[in-house]
Length: 244
Length: 379
Ligand SMILES: Nc1ncnc2c1ncn2[C@@H]1O[C@H](COP(=O)(O)OP(=O)(O)O)[C@@H](O)[C@H]1O
Ligand SMILES: [Mg+2]
Image 1 (tube, rainbow over the protein chains, first blue to last red):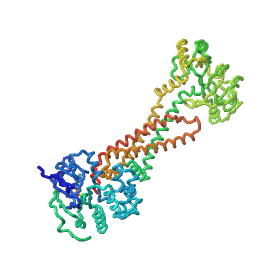
Image 2 (image 1 turned 30 degrees about the vertical axis):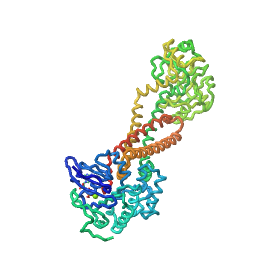
Image 3 (image 1 turned 135 degrees about the vertical axis):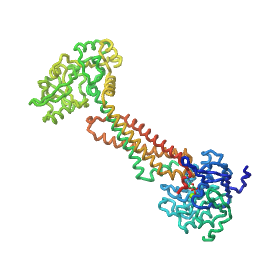
Image 4 (image 1 turned 45 degrees about the vertical axis):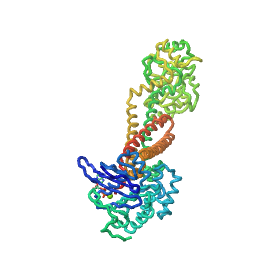
């Protein structure tokens, strides 16, 4: 039996989670009996070598991918027991996404891109766009409201993505390699911004990365290797600490 | 959400133009195929378009308008004596040959002999001369195209008052009529029924049809039935005779296959080109759609978005196609090309285009439901 009961400050809890990918007869286990916890108000980092299963873990905990076995409790919802339609609605209300490749819609302006999570929830363009503009100001580029993504630098695009992840004020932000496509200085600016605007007492931020330059932003670090969480520490001992 | 879909669609002008032109092309192909179909169908009953009468009486074996079987001269009076018939008039329709007075090769034509008293069935659109001059000796009224043909093929431009020969008899042009083209491009020459006897190749019987009209208060259908019953001949209303002729052509000529092929190719090209372009458009947007899905857009919302996109492409492409075709038809010389743009054609094509777009949209929606939202994390 799993003795875990979600405490108020627990945002995400995974227990004995398995996930494998199948190609015909070939079954490749990616997550192996994973135990993982992330708390509200913290920035939790999942670090580890490329291919160890970090992105898969992130997908499972935010509900974009089903686990094969085990329990996934996110923001008090038992995702492993929910129907796909419920999980989709859960994501639209509770999860903000920040991707390595930004994934902004190229034909929409910056403000329109930021408004997308609100539009998905059914908020009209008339109400969503002004809120998107406020968020654009908070991420420091208010003058870019009507620009399309291809007219923005990588750092600016990731700022737009941060605004998009926060505009509907979700309780969970998931970030997959948010700085990998950026140079070091821009990466630090983006992480500073994320820490300032994203960290809140009623929100958990989970960052997956193999970029040691940003480990120092973590409140808590889960080290992963070959589909398992090896250890959880308050910081990474062998990573450079105060580079920002 | 649909406005986001529209921005996706209009955002890439080149791709949008490709999508629309596929539908437009399919619309053009199908419209012109169907117009050709109805145009050629019109040939099958050109006789009834050019010779107007409420009721046609023919030999019981006649299957279609082009089949001119001889009747007995006395059949006119037998029809006349049927209760409910207001008038009945003899008519001759048959082949004849024209030749210039100076000799040379002959030109085939359709000879129409009208009742001299009533001129029942006479052409209504005369561009020159008068139909009543048919009562003068040796007079004929010719189809405007007959003059063109004689001019082009026999080298002499005949005009009102000029004469030519049929069966070695003089024929003086007293009128020029505008009539619909018959099958195999036949041109018409009208004269009186008595005179047709001299112009036509020698034959025993000179009556091919009896034209009739119902008395006031009677319908064409009931009088036609009465005539059939009492005379043993076949009496048809104009509409029935047209329908019968069209149906005969449908089942007895290769034309429907040829035209069906054109329309079918239009449909398949529409489905292939538009369908494939749209599907590719959706595939290329997989990442964007995946991002929307990850952010919590339901399959239903995305399906509505895709269907709106497909609908817009369909409507715009169809509108352009119909516009192009209307312009094209407006430029055609009147009554010459075997193309008829009935109002039904755009309706039929619209249904076909709707099917194409719905099929395409459904395929794309199916594809979208299979997009894993987790793909957005992959680089
Ligand atoms: N959809 C998938 N199908 C098959 N294999 C996959 C799929 N997604 C990820 N993998 C494999 O799973 C392993 C772990 O991937 P991932 O979770 O992305 O690792 P990380 O983010 O730590 O680099 C990799 O070897 C990857 O190739
Ligand atoms: Mg990864």
